[in-house]
Length: 356
Image (tube, rainbow, N blue to C red; front, side):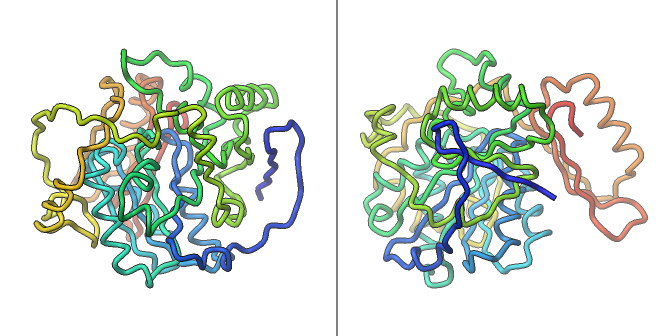
């Protein structure tokens, strides 16, 4: 059983009925909801809940962005989703770092079939700064006419948000948690069952220092009425311009750096059904320079493992316990889908810092 309360930044709670957004979404432009939040906050759990709830009566095209080079989140979604949503996987990096090369072509491919869905849900990686992702839908001429940002939903880990906000970053590196909160139209203060009243109050204070207007919804296991997140027409461009006056300015291109070529899909852009072909790549290279992006902290990296054989669960559990005991502070997020020896079902494991 779960509970939820919320406020609008005025220090008191409200209770009201939530109208179904299905009729409001019949506009000409396709609504996009961006789900963001730091590593391990509960974004994929929220996405699964939205897809399983079905009271919204909507069908979505889903764009999954995975920080590592092995896609796990889409497996976690498809294992639980009963609906037939189309899932596009974008792996090995943040879409915020290369929106022109990655995100824009995928969205345009989806728009060619927009009669097949009612809206688009984008789950960013936990390392993503939502700013350039949102900016894309205003600066790209085609997308600005066909797509509207309905809202940015940020999931916040009540237990870990304060240390993540206060941790020291490399010079010039963005604090992703801070940016994710700043751009939010709705904030889910998640995992409130893991904190006491003082910790929860302190987390709310830190959030309000960054974002004074977004509705805060307290949740356990990311359980919330989806109608409070979808069809809200919550994105406020004027509010964004107040703290980021250059938001609508096309950034200067950054010098290109040679990168090691990493195999993703056969087209080299993603691992989903919607892929770039050669014509798309030429089109993208000609429309505009890549959006300039503040760098990520290079001390944060991702390590992935794939095995052809079934896993010995006992050995895996022992190895994970030893790793968590020694390195919990450095383990922002760990997760996996395994096929265990002697068992037909697949198993999911995941954790954040000490919580395995």
